[in-house]
Structure formats: structure tokens, C-alpha cells
Image (cartoon, rainbow, N blue to C red; front, side, top):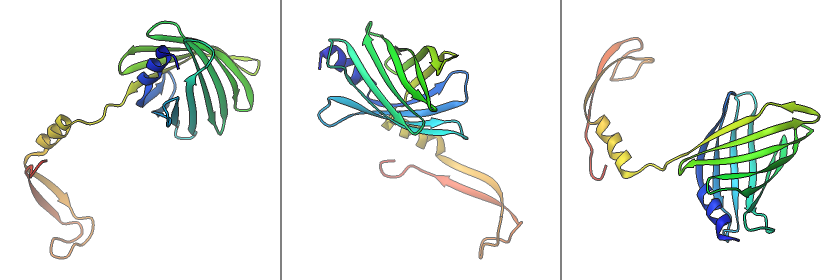
Length: 194
């Protein structure tokens, strides 16, 4: 695999949250290397509450050029092939074709890397069957793993004495009867290593 393609694929590794701009569609993309690191296996979950989707995608060097990337996406409703070339360090451009909801689908595909943790995918000049459909813009944000500092901030936020009012939802022997209001006290300390 050419180094240029390897760098582009390596950059994608990780977990990404996404939103389709202008639609109520959100989800998560998980990119991981396949054994041997010759391609990425991507898992996508998301959609609207009424129409969730799950898909699998293989992303790899196209084997024909120094800057070509070939992707195949399969789900219960769609299958697509995306062929792009690395246009610049931050942009990949090409085509998308396949089937969606039982109809032929196609258009242009552009991936733009904004920085290490943000990218946008554009599907442009799309057609579903013979009908043109609006351009699609999908914004991705890399999900950062929690760090020790994040954990320490979380612990600090809960340190101290907390007081709250509660109403028992059921009888609880030795503590109270249903409907009884009580004041609860909680002392929180960080023990050991967090």
C-alpha cells in the first residue's frame, strides 16, 4: 500500500460521532484496522428513532494507483461503492454508486479533513433512480477516550457533602414509608487511587 494511502487510512482509525446536517440523523462510526492492516473495517450505527440503521464498510487502497481509495458499504437497505483519490492532504474526491431503498443510486463524494478530530463528507449531484436528491453533508467529530485528568475532574466535582430532599416511592423497612419526605446526606471522598 502506498504511504500516502496508509497515512489517509491511519488518520481515520478511531470512533467518530456524526450528524447529517439538516436532518435528524445521528450515529457513530468505528474504524479499526483489519488483521494485517491492509484495510479498515468500519461499523456504522445510527439513524432516526423510527429508522435506525447498521452497516459495515471496508475501506482500502484501490490497488491501481498511488492515491486511490476504494470503499464498499453494505447494510439492510443499501450497498454503495465509493471510489476516491487523495486530491490534497485534506481532501479526497471521487464517486459514489450503488443501490439505496431498491433504486440505483449515484453521485459525487468528497471527504474534507478539517483538523485531527473533525471531517465532513459531502455527497453531491446525487440521483436516486432518475430523481435528483439534495446534497448531503455529514459532519464527523472524533470521540476522545477519557484520560486520567478527565477522571480526576469527575471525582473533584463530586467531592464534599451533599444534601437532598427525597420522597419514598415505596415502603422501605427501617428507613421510611411510601410518601414520606426525608432529607438525605451524602459525604463523598476520593479513596485510594480514585
